[in-house]
Length: 86
Image (cartoon, rainbow, N blue to C red; front, side, top):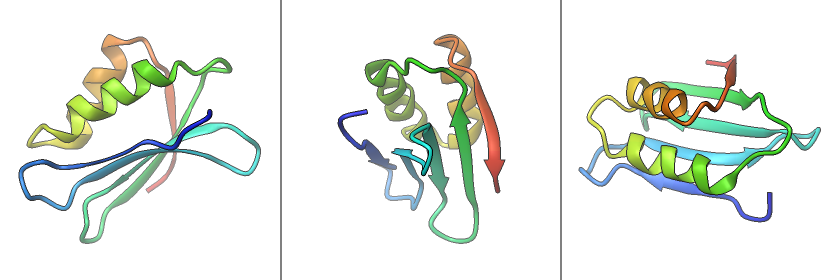
């Protein structure tokens, strides 16, 4: 992954979604609600399509319920994830 992507909720909420690489080079999605909830998912694909992932995150962070929206967007794009923290 050449770039790191992060998205903040446009409605003034503290919700934050980002893509990052872990220590082994695998792509992860990070969610933070700005208060107490932090969740990390590992993307279960070897060839990650950055455009599809960033589109999914952009749409999800604009929703009122970010985590369910993220699951829906990932499912629509057939992007498998595994929850690893949170």
